[in-house]
Image (cartoon, rainbow, N blue to C red; front, side, top):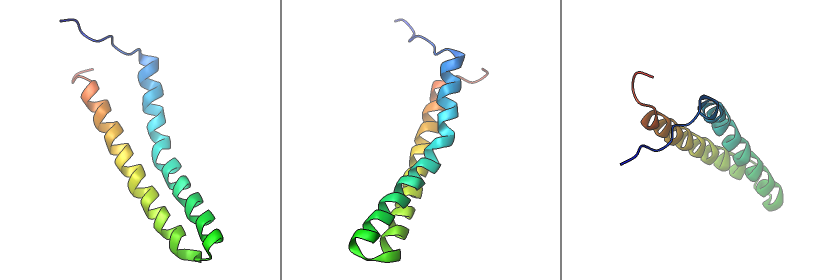
Length: 78
């Protein structure tokens, strides 16, 4: 059985650098959706806070999944 091709160092660096954007982008999307829905429905702070919390939770879950995948793909000692 052959090993899958190893990613280049540049590919690994690109994947790791994207990890820093996962959490802030999820929070920003939650804030935006909550703000727009609050303006549209007139429920000022409720949906903004709800979608912000959902954005934080979603961002943390995505970050943990990406970190777990990165640790699984990287053999120890490298």
